[in-house]
Length: 240
Picture 1: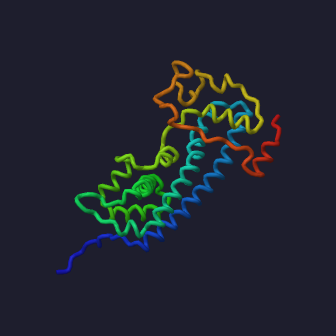
Picture 2: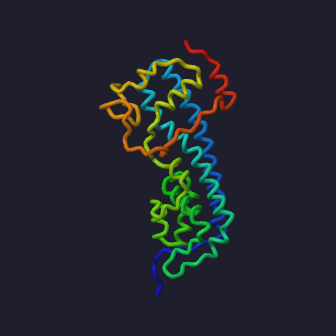
Picture 3: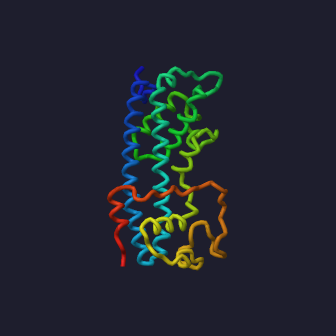
């Protein structure tokens, strides 16, 4: 008797390899787009600091830090995706036995890191296709566990750089931008505890008290100056 129903997806090594290769291309495109966005935002923040608009700068800096951090996160992710691509035959040969997922231990970090990132980078459809293929291979439970890092197997850099933690050192980042652009600023006003927007990591009851941040849990990426000829020209400008 004929019945309607969707065909169960199977793991196709050739298709997975092609999707992974395209996902890597998309990841690198996203990385380049983010690099350009960071350059523009850094210039905008420098302009705000030069005009003494410290509240506005504090509002915008957190989003910029997340983008700047994601540049390195995307680079690490592309390396793991490339490892998955290179080892697609190893993944294809794996078998689920005795209730285990069957994911090779030497591939678990790369596989789970890609799955975890796919749950957050919905702008890369090929990455979603890879995740679906891995689900057909290793099971829904394995993918759902990896998506929340339930077994702590996701790479630490991928977690930190592509996560959604609230940056806690925006003031230092702003000071670094001001230094890069040769700007003078009022540090007291920049860090004012009674400002309209309280600096990240500070509470309104007292300057310098940290809110639930473990040492070394979140680091601002170093700003290299200048990054290109465009920034070199910007840094040479003197603001009145």
